[in-house]
Length: 332
Image 1 (spheres, rainbow, N blue to C red):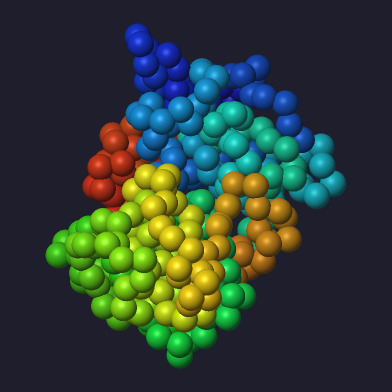
Image 2: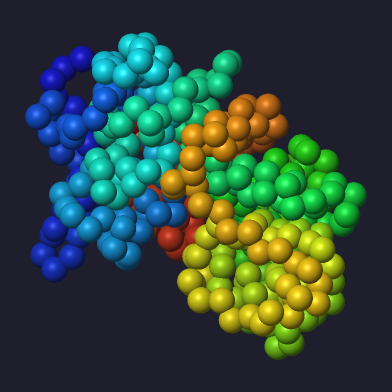
């Protein structure tokens, strides 16, 4: 491979930040144990924030963006990885504090990489990315909290997004009654039904904080990728002994609620972090994704774009204009 490579770099432009494709060289790669020839990255909500500068995701520009990548090991100083091995990376501050995956090459610590499950390729891994990995962690958390498949409907908020789409497909495949809640119910009804949603509901009044500490019991569990008022509303509707896995804050970081769902209904609120998730749970999640996420569902929710379209799609994902998953072919 040539010493030079293309990368999408976020740097200071005027009073703010902007992103552009630059040609970098070996000297621009950071320290690390493993050098990877990147095949694909993907677009997540956090990437949209970084590329547009709407939130201080990147604090030390210039920085190659992209919090995920999948590719092939090119060089390794670690006994855990060998040249030619297919790997995936999600999280660990890559694309924020460490040069990321919107590039044809990456160099990282060996402990940040995961080998791909047997029979899986790099496009599959990138299509899952942080969003799908987080969704799997949420589903595992609900299982461990005792949410049974026959206990009642499980709500998925932000269902047309990346985390939501994968959550719906996983829950349906595992035998749960997945109810999709989205602000794009009319546009995405057929899409979400095709992923296995038993019903598709508009977010409606659930986008507002509940007017009572407890509402009628609806949900045996929930995967919430929205946060804010939506999370407060879902908690007030969760059935006795239910659990909510919370992993996002697109609706804001605040949570206006009471202790009533927790002490009168025994509801559990489980926080899900995918960035610093340890190796054991991380590997379990990837193995579960290989087993439990239907390939046809993943294909149905995935579009592939070249590197030069990522900035535009980054704005789209923040404005609710992206459905499912966006894979980035960094070599196109």
